[in-house]
Length: 123
Image (spheres, rainbow, N blue to C red):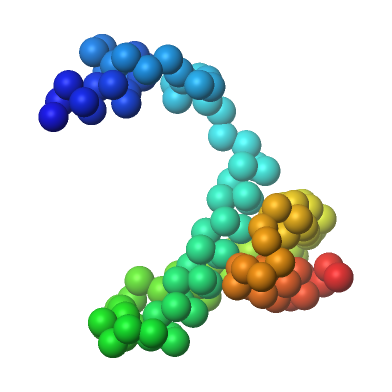
């Protein structure tokens, strides 16, 4: 099993790694403000989608994930609201608009992104 796993690792990740690195090694990677904001927006979209799926509970077993304390949408919304108050709305809107162009129109995520855009005051 290790032999197969090492084929998936880069030399930066493990000395026996066989795959060539595709970007900067993690040691050289520098976090950016835009990257962090993009992470928050991504997380909000993911958690909104998961919360929606759990609340609708198409399968009875999904209901077990309600009110577990793992819900993060509200806290992420507070974080994004803070950034909005700091004047970073245009960057958040640009991120969401880019995503909206890339995702098919029939996708449920479009609904979530449209809601976020409305909350942020864009479109």
